[in-house]
Every structure is written in C-alpha cells, then in structure tokens.
Image 1 (cartoon, rainbow, N blue to C red):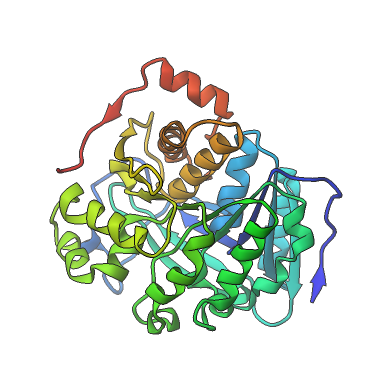
Image 2: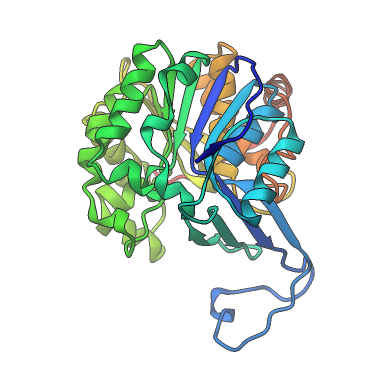
Length: 360
C-alpha cells in the first residue's frame, strides 16, 4: 500500500472513511414527468450530459467543509486504477488536504447515481477498496493533529464492521482519549449485503458512548431498529414525530449516544440532547432550486460540524445544518452551492423561509 503525499498543516477537522467517485447521468430539464415505472428492461432514455464528482463521506463532507471555510483533511483508501486517478486529481485541484492510501487490493469505490427529477435517488454502489479500510489506519498521530474527527459510513466498509464493532469503537475511544470532538454517520444497509448479517445494535452500543454527535438518516436507523414501521413509510405512510422520530431517539439514547441528529431529507432534522433531554425538529429551509439531493445529508453534516467548530450552540448548529442541506440540493456537486458559515447565519437571520411538513 502506498501513501500519497500529505501537506504538513494542522487541520481543524479530520474526515475519514468512505470515498467514492459519483457518476450522475443528467436527466433533461424539460419534457414529460419521469416515474419509477419508466425504468423497464429494453427502454432507451435520452440523457443530457453527465456529472462526475468526488462523493462518499470524504468527498462530500470534506469539500463542503472547505466551502464553509473550515480547515479539513480527508483520509481514505483509493484503488491503483483510473477511477482512483480521477478522484485524487479532482480532490487535489480542490485544494483539500488529503491522505490517500493507494491499494492494489481492490478497485476504487464508485456509485452510479440515478436521480430523476422528483424521484428519490437510486445508488448502484461498489464499495471496492473501502472494504479494506482499517481502524488502525487512523493513527493517534493523525488524530492528534485535529480538533474534530468525523467518520462514515461503516456499513459500506467491511473491515470496519466485521469484528462486531471492536475496531470502530477503538478508533472513537482513541479520538476521545486525545481530546477530540467526534461524530459518526451511517449508510443505508443493503439487505442483500454482508453488512445486513451483523448486529448493528451491538456495534453501535460499543461505539456510541465515544461519539459526541451521531448523525444518521431516518431511513438508515428505521430500517435497523423498526423495520416494520420503515416498510409502512416506504408504502406511503407519512413521517411522524410520535411514530418514528421519538421512538428512534429513545432507542439510540439507550445505546449511549450524547447528541443525536436524525436527517429527514426534505422534511428537516430531528435533534435530541442526552444531557438536557432537549429535543426538537428543525424544519427544512426552502431551497432556491432543486437539482439533485445527492450529498445533501453530508452537506448538512458539514454545516453542523463547521458551526460547532465556530462555537455555536447545539441547536444553532442544527439550524445551520438544515440550511447547508438546502443549499446543496441546488447543484449536482455537493459543495459548489455551499457558502461560508457566517453567510449561512446571515441568510437565516434575514428570514429564510422554512417549510413545515412533519406530522406530529
């Protein structure tokens, strides 16, 4: 394994874990409405270009933090292949400090993102070399050079979860021992993947006591803890505070979480503070335009981390997270529509409209 060169500069945030090349075919802006029933074998659908970006937690959160003017270093595996070359070149051109572990064990991770207008995204994902990311890659030396450690997404990284969570917990335990603030994001678990065969409640129970901010999405958590209720929502039942979010919040608190943010897509963000038992729901901000929701959740996480780094309160940081997510959907590239955190705060204070859509 080869380590690419790293700039010798202390960063505020270390983002480690899954790094992906996102390939997004662009649907025509004009024309007939597209439905899931349109995706049938043998049909040709005319497209309007293609977008290729660095994605995954390292690409999305890392680049969004840079746009928020928060110092960041990303740490990830790439393959020794053409996709890896593209990823490393894109991130190098962005100016982000990067620690790449270049491996011959597998191909670089990639996703084909199917994002028709008005339809939630479909991902064709190959974890590739991300399966070989080891918690020991995140050394104490690398942790000690940062103030905040963010990691994602363990369900897409086989070596991270295959030991029943011991290495994941150890990584966060070391980060806390060194005095860092920490956050953890998840990913949706493919029911046909090896990740579906492990006990995620056990894994999270070992790790969450060392995580300051747990920032998963509603679907990622509901599919693990309340699969029957998750299926009801897939079939059209509305998202509810009483049926979905509060039960999930209590379940996650019992596993040792301190602060919880549950991202709820276009509805907003549910939050819960274990110390004060303060809970609330931050309604989504109205986006200027909706181009693609791909990476919006990661942009929200970046907005939250940047706010915490800048000394904002937990609730203020949640509001900035929702705002960053709303900005991100106006572009195919997660980071290109993000503005500095002080500008986000100014827009919020100037009366940026929020949309209430959550059921009690």
